[in-house]
Image (tube, rainbow, N blue to C red; front, side, top):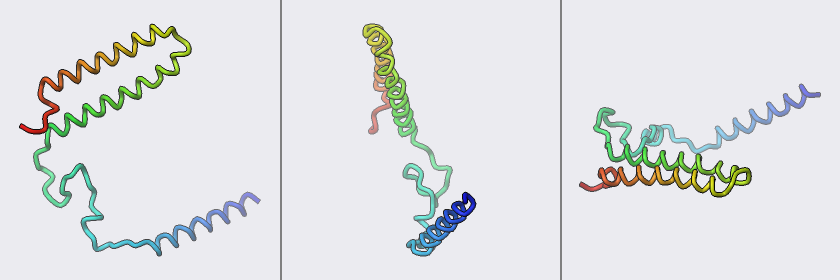
Length: 115
């Protein structure tokens, strides 16, 4: 019984995949669509072009603040088990450390796009 169901499911899967492959509008001749796209770089040019350090710093700052959200969200679950004042001190100190880092990046000019 299970073997018959598995064979039916396998057959349906193969039929659907074959139909999707046959009916899809693929254009193999379009070179630009088949090349990978990475952050605005032209994939057909040289890979040894200079990389923008400012773009890299903005990306790192974004990742830091993205991780910050992931670290602050579990504090909401802990809120029911701990005193509110303790939760406030932990969250506030975490945010102050991040704001000091953001101010440092701002003071160093890492957030300025124009020269």
